[in-house]
Length: 139
Image 1 (cartoon, helix red, strand yellow):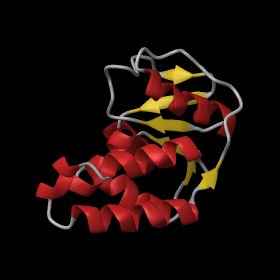
Image 2: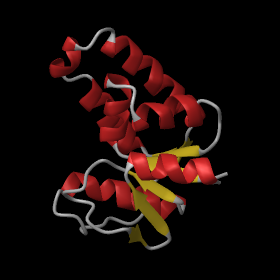
Image 3: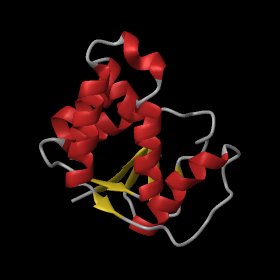
Image 4: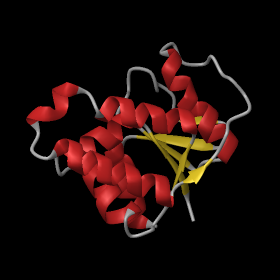
């Protein structure tokens, strides 16, 4: 089964609109088509970002976010990255690469094209939600 690291922006987008992030989470992950890899640091970021007041304008956002995060915690494989990286200028995003490295993830899925300007990191492919969706439909 493929191992995936989801950037926080993918989780947020999946709860706001029914586009590719939504389909990845609710059609693929919930159907056990891939394994999400997390770390304590990434789970903390998920919870902190999804609790931001700006998301209150979306109907039932916090209830849906809490439910999704509990599901992720229950279904994900947790890793403790041993190597600290300083590869990306946005220091917080380095934890995504650290987790991908530790878990030997197949993919990082991110909507962050500002910081993730490269296609691969070691053996991990870095894709947008749209590109991952289309690849997942072929395999």
